[in-house]
Image 1 (cartoon, rainbow, N blue to C red):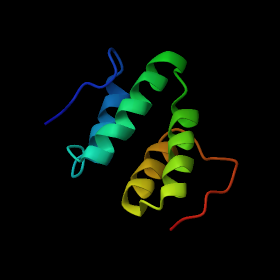
Image 2: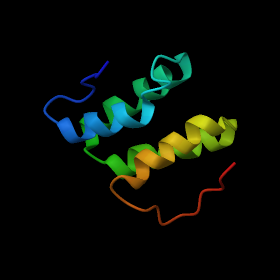
Image 3: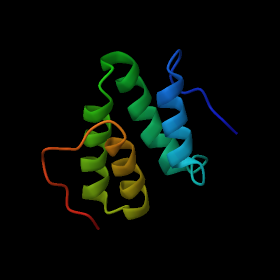
Length: 86
């Protein structure tokens, strides 16, 4: 199912749906999206939002989610700060 997470932004919705397709019903993913979506709507800062979430996920060692978040981050930009991959 295709979700519209962010109003009037089909490209961002496509990327989020594409990356999270297999796990978007997971409670952990829903929790992360509950954090990320308001940030994206408020700041319009794709890279900062996903980077901040990747840092949070790196600390909790949830590797599958971290990899998908890093993929979302790479959609628009390359982080300038190194993130340790699991």
